[in-house]
Length: 363
Image (cartoon, rainbow, N blue to C red; front, side, top):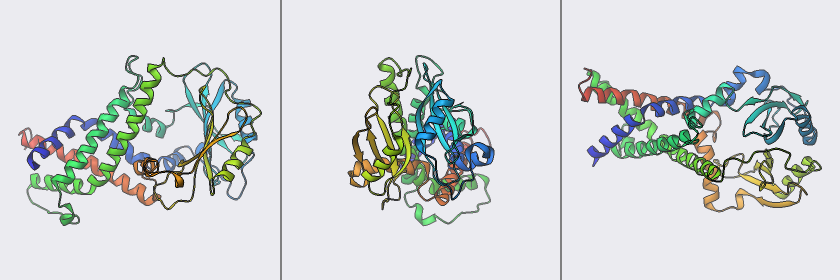
């Protein structure tokens, strides 16, 4: 069984070698997405407002709407640490195109012009990570990249499982390395050690990647089955909505609720939804774990979902976000995930060398 698994493990790795390398490389970088943005574009991504208070959300929304009349707000990332700028996502009217704008929520200063979602380096890397830049390459296959990403995530999961089975007693040699004189033996040892260290996290990344790609593919497939995305032509919420009141009501509705994300209605069946985080014993709970939804015309409360009162399945699904992105333990988990990405690249490189030597293509 181990010999069969080893063959399956090797062939799957070869089939998906290039996308695995791209996903591993981009994933290692993307765990530090904000840090990279702060370094490359500090005037857009960061602000210096520690100790100050955010302006009225109504004022900020009016600022965006009055400055970008050809767009409508689709969603809004909220930050109140005095360091990160808000990120506002706009939809250009009469199109399916989304754009991003950076905004200082303490001064209402607009820090950037609307740019496509893949304009900045880390956003381009994110698209490469998830779709390999293949989505919309062909009109009849608008989700090709997402579908390929799904298959690669499945292969990553199988590689993680098979690696754990092949080295099922991995804990015995977790901190040992055999410095053999033979180059081929050294290569095998590097591959084994890389697999030992990477397989558990690789399995987590693979399985969560399967979930996210599958959800995205099914959603997009359904959208295109129904004739494509809805084309926004006008504002789909009442201009009389008091967003400051809605944010305050969301805090009153869910104990300890801290809003982190505003989702505006950009399709007929959508309302205003406020995402946020709550104090929780689950370290994997995301910053979007709980939601409060209001009617887009009247502002009436529709439903509130406190993740602490939800069942195991809802809490598990919410945890997948932190498990995939590696944000759950701050800088420490980010470093671990980045190292695992490097380990995957090392394992792929040593695996290819092992295959080439078995085929006597190199000595």
